[in-house]
Image 1 (cartoon, helix red, strand yellow):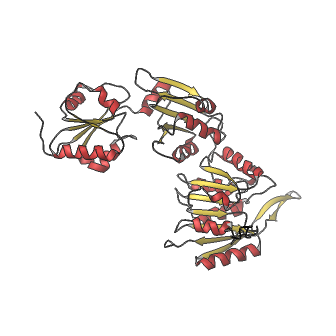
Image 2 (cartoon, helix red, strand yellow):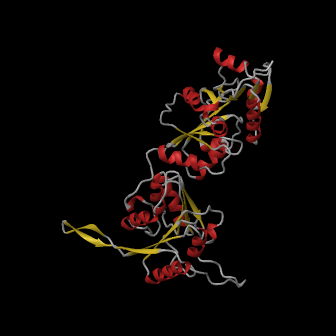
Image 3 (cartoon, one colour):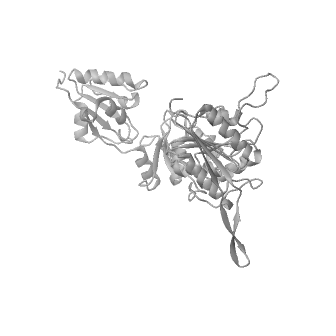
Amino acid sequence: MKNRLTDPLIEVLGLGMGSSLNRAEMERLVSADVLAGGARLLARFAHLPGERIVVGSPLSEALERMAKARAEGLRVAVLADGDPLFYGIGTRLVEHFGADALHFTPGITAVQAACARLGLTWNDLAAVSLHGRDDPGPLLAALAASGRAAVYTDQVNTPSAIGMLLLEYSLDDAVLWVCENLGGPEERLRRLSPAEAAREEFAPLNLVIVQIASASDARPMLGRPDDFYHRHDGLITKGPARACSVAALRLTPDAVLWDVGAGCGSVGIEALALMPRGRVFAVERDPERHQAIKENIRRSGAWLVKAVKGAAPEAFVGLPDPDRVFVGGSLGNPGAVGAAKAPASGKAKPGALAEACRRLKPGGRIVANTVLLGSLHAALEHFQALGWPVEVTQVQAGVSAPLAGDLRLSAQNPIFIVAADKPSSS
């Protein structure tokens, strides 16, 4: 006979990593009229009576069936891996039913179990989920912040894919601990290099712990000396202008920044210190400068900076629309501001600045640096034609240099910093 109650609580049971339920938890499970969970978890309790709701995709269907059963006064129990409130189904259940309708029983998380097996402390270990994501940003942000991370994977973001991602960022000496089937009879723990992980196959149930070896003390930061950056032909936005340019961008923690004509990438890399959840795309057409950017990403641990090789504006294709744009180069090139010279087809291509303005999100901000009065004039005309509020700051710094046992000030070239805001209604 069904147990009919008035708005009964939904029991959400975290089964941990293959662990057994205690007596009180088992009693709550046995008394349920409806069991919900993944097919694998439901199979563990096939001997129990009651209706079954298989939780899959789309999740909304399972949630509606649970709500209907609860409205009918039936006891509903939800089975979850690990701890349901730690990268589990608990978040969606709270969103759908409200916390007051749920009773949670925590279990041992995959991260907790993996660290126990490996003897790793995890009080400061960032845990990120790439499940259902096409952007590795959370993993890169965690690595930039602390040099290591535990990663929940899926069928696309596999340990192999993570290995290939690390190789793409020249993290050849990173370490991956791949933990498969935790708590099950086929549990396996492996320590692999990115290259080894990239060519292996793994069980669908796995957790990966990544640790950067060579760059564990490297973090994005403001105010690094110019000599820190590897650069080709001495090309760099020097320290005083770099600091003013980063300030002019008015960055937010989760912004997407394009660094156009990036040179050695110093502006985008230092901007990342103010964007812990953001992304930087450093666009540079010169192959040697592009390589310098990649080396500076490695030196500074700025893993959320992606070096994009190509000429603007063609290199913008495929990039996410930016919240902020910094143009440190290319304004002096023909067609950089407005339309470039028409090719044989007769159709003019947009210049780098024009296309960046078009792609900039409404409410976004663009900052362009130039030393040439002609480029300054062209940029101002462009922003004024768009009707965007614009401001200009001239930065001219003197930096100390030794002379006759004392110090003198060595003047740097004046830089014009042009900043414009795209109206929110655009």
